[in-house]
Image 1 (cartoon, one colour):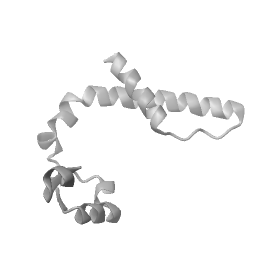
Image 2: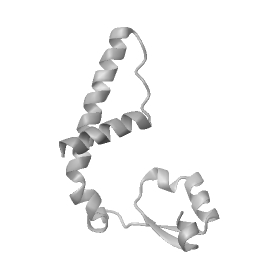
Image 3: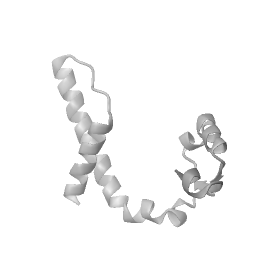
Image 4: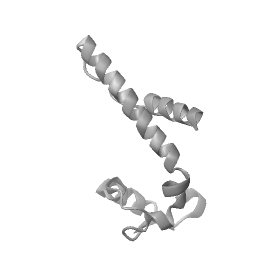
Length: 102
């Protein structure tokens, strides 16, 4: 989408390992997008919404995910089954519950 809207661009990104994988770098490069990393320990200054405004919501989502995972794992153990894999349905459920609590 960035290439379609803006063409060649610089994309400033944090140091999440997946962002800097070979597949990600090649995909960005082929779309004329150059990745530029944030300096270490600068996230709190450069990504203020991520570390301040959304911190409470993110904490609620983590707590709800932990509770749901525990419940699903206990149910699977009681039924002698494997714990179900996480997917988009579980993620949307957790986020919607977290937004209701906020």
